[in-house]
Image 1 (cartoon, rainbow over the protein chains, first blue to last red):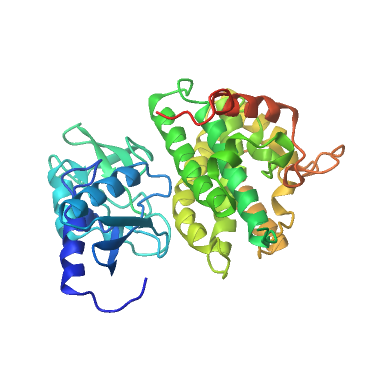
Image 2: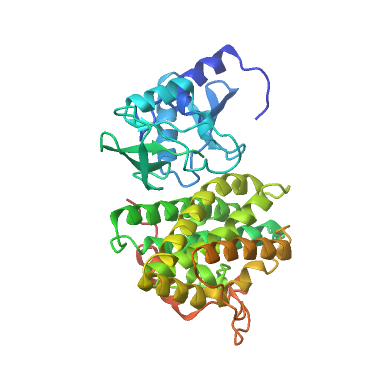
Length: 166
Length: 241
């Protein structure tokens, strides 16, 4: 994609594509998740959208593409192409501050910011999204989806998902 | 119109087949894992690998045709990933040997100008979790009960002879096999010793083998695995749901 400054139309379409809710975590928008990389209008009512997957095998990417196409069709773009791009690789650091706040509110401990390459050492504290305690333990590195780990709060005893760092 | 085969295709096919075949093997644990958390963990690792396989095979051709319509001899995966699951310790050994290799390989590949570099950079972050999962289980089983220790050692010994193939040169893959072997050996040795287990001493290739998976030569159980994996697609071409 050519990296020229976006036109007002492109900015509007980018906002529309970014407003689509994540199919797995509907409290988050795709913009807050940080997966919409760019929008390029390449002709009258023709637009290309660059979307990056969280995990390479994430099955939600197909639903995301379909939802973006639908929203942009509804706003007059007849020809919408959603392309998957891998580079630069998505990171949990791409989730916005508002996205993190919503995750915690939804009961999912947000990812910690990266300090170095690779997984964050699991000995660092993850706060319980229910009671706020920092005394939590890892139950499994993999949970309901590839992007989450399963933890339990030692204080309130509730299990919870943790959006693990990638 | 015919185009000359690209050297990157050989590399994408080899790594794509590794990921596809191991993904299928891990998927066989669904409904059989020792605890629910492991059921979910193995399925998630399988899903990551399937995603990597789809990207890699799509660089070569039609992903479905490549996965479902090739004969055994056309697959280029290493023999390690096609080995049957065995008991849980056996599967963890396969995960340890393979995910350490894949992590080191992808990390190196990510810094090259290869067509596979973007995928490698992304997948390395996922595989870091697979490796951590395998290392933690190796420690737990090796330093667990007498029974788990014995089973883990049995797994390490049984799969050792499939590890030499990991360091063979692959066409189109600009990675130094010897430095990969040195680092892999150091990592595996450190985890295995910490788990109070013993690094196997035998040869890292079977004495009888005429070749290996990268040349399209596979072990007995692979044909049966493929038959099961491809059965639906071959019986109902173009089926979807």
